[in-house]
Length: 575
Ligand code: ADP
Ligand code: TZD
Ligand code: MG
Image (tube, rainbow, N blue to C red):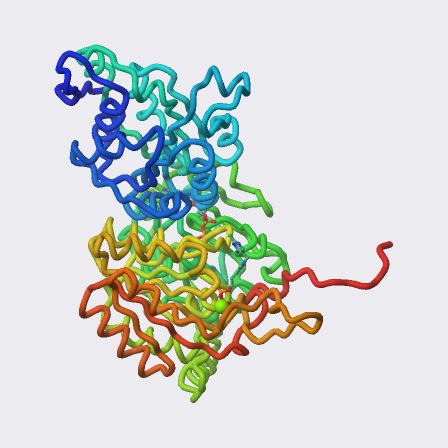
């Protein structure tokens, strides 16, 4: 049974309530505490009413960053983040983030005002006219429009349930201007609001599927567990740790699952990634898809004869790339509980030879990495700059880390260890640029903890204006721009005209001076020492800071670790 929420709605008029008030109250009834967005016609009053009713409103400079912030809030809290946008162009700016959240399986709701339906539908040319519901549908998990004020409570509840249940995702909720402005009797409004019961119910796996998975693990000679960001999202940290430790199986975290078990855990095989992917004979995927980030499960990256166990809440994910021998469909917390319950003592044993092989490879790779990190490089390269950051963050394990770029991302993921679950946010499944400032803002707002955003200079540019937002809300966000003067590299020369090459950005840029314009603190860092000192000072101060870290323009590689995916020009005639 749903619980009706009494006594929420009132209007200055007393006897009446309106769409703005009903929306704010419906959000409160669903536990929403923060909203991210950009205001304008017709939603300005929605932000005002929400503020008046105790919802925190974080106003951005562009909707895409607000949408990314809402998505990160969803990932970090497990409840849908809310992004508020205006009609047509504002809606479309936000839609990129909504689609990205759906791809990442993050729960988020974009609430957008829209123009008058009768004018839109006859294409008569309203202010900011667009059929937003139709535009949103292909990019979202679900999309709804509320056409009557008395349906607002229902619309919000459906959006929350759709975003948070099963595989989480992005939901669009369209609120036309006339619905927001409409009034209805306050008692009818009150009666229309309710608090949904159990919006994200547990999904318990079938006992047979659990037994099949354990039987397969018991046969393994070279088992591997891969933890994905679904496992981080599931908040089953202790249960996952118990299973990993009870079985003794090596694990590999995907980038946003780093810290779910600490990166210095003795069973981490991260430093032997290629070896374990290539050699494992039984692989247990927990909240990780076999998409491009895992080479679609194909050989030669994986053994052709490897058999897979996949733990996922979405049954349609199973077999998406290669046959799965043991699908376990359910939410990860329930699956981990069932696996642990059903696991017999001594049922799964990892042969010592497998660990010997892994440890030997780890030792070799760690030695190679150590040489790169401690090299004397002037100007700094990615490794030496990240070593300075790593050393500071080793003492500040409460810090949330945001990371985007190409080389900046790839090196950052490998060099900076994580020790806490859900403390790393990055470009994710799409490898998208522009998430940085939105993710950093949400991490600071939702956690109250300091945030360090390690940003490629190109990546930073996609949402750089949000440093004003960071300063306006006094957020403890330290942005480190890895300024190598370009997309991947800054040393390309265009031989054909005086224009810069396509990959080139201004290496002389003083990004640190941007933040000074808004009252924040800027540092220029040319050496690892300067970078380390600036970062330590910034974290001690807890104030908005931007560090311009000058990196050798020749240091990167085109597309970072994805160099093999580049489509290069061929002068061979097509056959
Ligand atoms: P990564 O990029 O880290 O490899 P993916 O985003 O590809 O991770 O995969 C995450 C998977 O986790 C998705 O297939 C999603 O359906 C699944 N998932 C998300 N939340 C849960 C949950 N609570 N229980 C089970 N599976 C989940
Ligand atoms: N646009 C969007 C939205 N996402 C993208 N991924 C790209 C463009 C293409 N792209 C990448 O894949 S990485 C990248 C772009 C533009 C920027 C790389 O440059 P950087 O990082 O300065 O951020 P490095 O350290 O110089 O490699
Ligand atoms: Mg760059």
